[in-house]
Length: 273
Image (cartoon, rainbow, N blue to C red; front, side, top):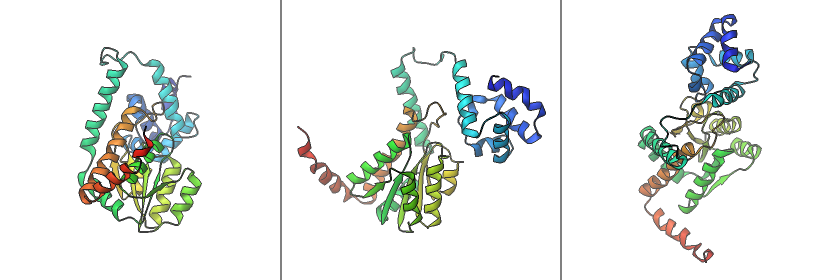
């Protein structure tokens, strides 16, 4: 049975808490794709446990499996976008990128960015972590910090990252990237580092997420992803804007880092033909 039809048919026999989740989902299924389990529970005036029971009632093992099925069903129902710029995919991408950048600019707290820049400058050790598409942003951050003379490390394995977090301390900074804010490995590492007293920074699109809840500093990027659009261009460009903004605030706080940029650039001049 189609998922939306299944929800509609099952809702009358659900408990009141589950009915609230069902009714909210039926009213705007597209919006549910962009919500974390915490956000859906709050908006439906229910609880995270009720959302999980709702998903299991429909035959899913978890919230992400439910969202993936919903995304697949809605994708088959989509009509051509009337607001599309004459159907030109390139122009559409440019427009969505512009919107994502504008929204991210409005979301970013300048004092927050400045505080994170100072934390990075004073850190004994900087550990960066992200999985899948978020790993791209993590690698770009590592590159930017290297240009500024700030040594950082990305663990390519979640178990190694967890072990490192378990031995971190107050002089360390852990920088986690997760658009959803719900990636289990990323959240686990953040929790371990936080418990050890390390400063935890997160780039995410969801202010109400497990990752945001454990971070000392949250840097919000616009354009949350659906299960079918993970790593999409708008969300990536929003995250990269934050990374570049951090670089600018670092050089603002420590102008001598501009000399470091020149030195690191000079170190690789003989690598180009």
